[in-house]
Length: 335
Ligand code: FAQ
Image (tube, rainbow, N blue to C red):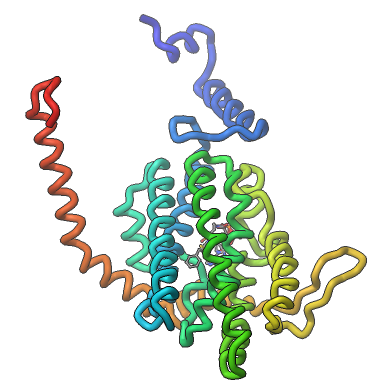
């Protein structure tokens, strides 16, 4: 039988022509808002970009469990404790969906974990800040999960199928997280002067890092233009940051907290908020590993990984035995 490769030789097509066909199909799928699936041909750079972004995102969810995990044993009531535990478990789940999505691109979970615990992988800057008071649980929910929603709702339409589909579920859970944070702050703001101060102080500490979460300004964002052409990202970092501030202003009024930016004002002509200067030096320092909690977060993850070795070994052994049993069971007999 003549193979498609032989046929193309007979037709006088070169390898480049065949590659162009694949490329053309890929470009058409993107242009027509259709999804790229793991079985489809994709440019190597598209694959690499997705692995980079999805694995960083997964690492962020997993490391993001730590600042809040810090408060599970000290939550002020049984109800708050149950809610916080559920939220932190959700973050673990998000990490798992995302690692699975990245695995469809040809990287293994072990490779990703190795990149994280060796300190070679990035994860969101935001999780390198400390959580000294209970109000930080409110500020993280309101600001960090709020920023995550603004950033991630457009990712539900990402051109890569497994990523976009994972994002749909993640976003549903993030909106619950955001509301629980808002409600913690609202309760504190209806409390004593000390509680109000605690809430305001947490907002003061988390506001600027949550704006930086969207990534560097557009003119310093090397990946945005290509990621937007590929329809992985749908909006630029600055566009999403702007949208986030617009969402926060009315909510801050309801809460009765002040956003710690004296330069914040609505430009009546453009309808856009003008925001003060973000400390990008601080952001890049955190990315270089020099934030307040980088070392602590990585050390904790390394220890958890080592302590979890027996669980991974037990799961692998169980899977091996199950597979053996299935192989030894005659066809038609339920094992
Ligand atoms: N932190 O060219 P761009 C959450 C890096 S999940 C650290 O603009 P890109 C849920 C960037 O990777 C939060 N690094 O890059 C939760 C790149 O470095 P590289 C995580 C950052 O990819 C809540 C370089 O700077 N969310 O919060 C950051 O086009 C509560 C140049 O930047 C996601 O990952 C940063 N903030 O845009 C969990 C969402 N920003 O790789 C627990 C998916 C930028 O070239 C508790 N990711 N960098 O060496 C994205 O949307 C994008 O990757 C951006 C960055 C927007 C983060």
